[in-house]
Image (cartoon, rainbow, N blue to C red; front, side, top):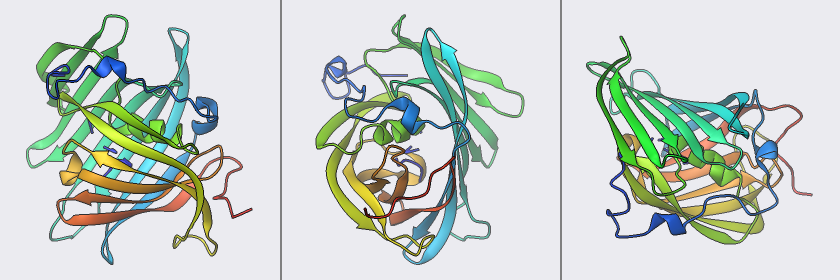
Length: 273
């Protein structure tokens, strides 16, 4: 339910899964957007998730802080994914933390998922200099690690939450990326097609159409709540590139994700100029 993309979810079996050399794929943004425009400390975006006309949950994505690591600006981000109470067909509660570099690469990921037996955590530390990922798993209640391993890192990688910011950083251009994505202790590709043509999108939170640009693509992994397959999204047609609306495929079928509330300094969803 999260990605704009697990979109939101995400050791590595190297590139053997698809027989591809993932090092050929570069995920650094090449368009006019920069990390400093996309990342805004204090940004707080709340999305409502619907299945047909039924409201089933919320996704909240925050940018918490900025710090410097090895000469790069790193942004700590967090996503809360919660189904609404008393729904008969879904009970989902997850928290994802991702440290994302100004180049839109994942530096560290921690996922918390609620199960019947308690909250489980998964942690990925990406060390691009040593070309390795340190994977840890365990229970949140005591933070006791019951599984850990080092696995090879052969590409510039995204986790589910950093992928959300990578997509924002590459809007407003006509281009396709095949993006190495690390999820469920394996690496796969997420394809995103970016389009430059403006489109007008209506959401319930506003009395005017939002000036947007479109993305679509293919998720080749199975993420949270069965997220997989084709997706489509619309991002604000401005330097902030805030996701406005999306359609994704999960266990239930297609779900709609729509911006409901937002808090970002001096930003409002843009009108058509």
